[in-house]
Image (cartoon, rainbow, N blue to C red; front, side):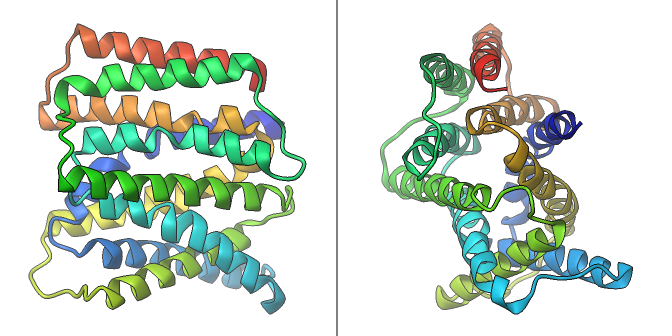
Length: 290
């Protein structure tokens, strides 16, 4: 039953986080990136903590706060914050293809960690096939120009991948005893770090925040954080790392289709072929890993 629920949670990740690239882009139109991300996660974490307090559930003891803060810093502060930062200078399609390197980071770090399971040959082939599909999918609409914006965005996305992989491996080692109240504190600590970093970089709300940016932030809080992040933390404890990490491939496919439907971006047979190749890669990895 837990495996079935984990796959259901994985499907939610694929669907919801595939829409957050667009939501982040809209949100940072009129809100500084790190402040926006910090508010998103602080509000989400605070709502979860308040919910558990009202329901009378126990919250993590203070001795647990340090490991929760570390996980929040890696997964949310670095893993999400760097992606938001990158979307200032990197087109969404290119950001998606760079973040799609995260399965390689996750599988590699998990294998190197103590007790980690090395990926099989089929899993490695599946990861490369899936990534090739991502490149096919986004390349028609992406200008990979190695300018200042590209390199700063590239570094930011790879820091995000590293932080996400390290945080996921650290959280996975805790085992299935993690609770949603633990997840809530990860959100809170990660959000506080983002606010601190934003303040140190001189970010502040100096202009008018548009209604569409506020709507995007609310969507990110409810769907991207409360729903999808909770699903990720559940799936992390019950699915093989190689299988779980494929959500980023599905995210990119969905992001491209969403751009076609909402923003009127072009879709052609080349992109359709890329989507098909991604699905083949997912199938290769899932057969062995799931």
